[in-house]
Image 1 (cartoon, helix red, strand yellow):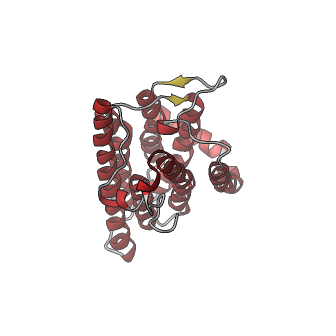
Image 2 (tube, rainbow, N blue to C red; image 1 turned 90 degrees about the vertical axis):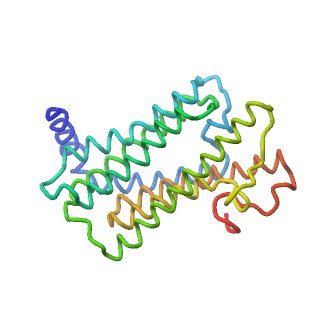
Length: 268
């Protein structure tokens, strides 16, 4: 594996590090562009209930597409962390945050896909765009994680960030579990169901809210720009999708949706 790590360092130090300011600025700007395009409705990520076919990009199996695009994140984080890891204690801030990252993506990219009762087809363009995100931002974060070699101390950052991370994770996982239960029910009856459990009573996408909260806690503990850019991209991708979910629910269930919001109760 050392040869792989050497290649990663060579490519990164030769083609990325000399232009890191310009590349980071472009990546942050692209997040806002994505938010604007998705919010305008000009483009929607074509998977799940919003899947649509076209003649340019073929559709593929939903489970395969999701696992393919998401598995890049834990792999890239691990490789970059190992490639740039600096000497330090086994249990450091970087290693703890790396473990949290791998926990999240083991659930997201593997476990949740395996136990899912089914996933709607997705288009290859959606998979490729998601794969790009799951390579660039994780590599940036891992580069910083590898340098966070100090022991994890009970500072205001960790005392605030870690509970926020686990709160978000619990919201994300429990909401996804409820949606899987609904999908199993739909598989038997053929009918869509309006979720009426927990935060679903206030917003239509508490799983997305949980993910934003989760990565906000992560960014607080990490204390580097890369963590906050990860939060930015998460918001710019999921907030417009939550609005699309809300519109979809209103079209299907009408007044039963009530005063629900998309991702932030009473706000958005």
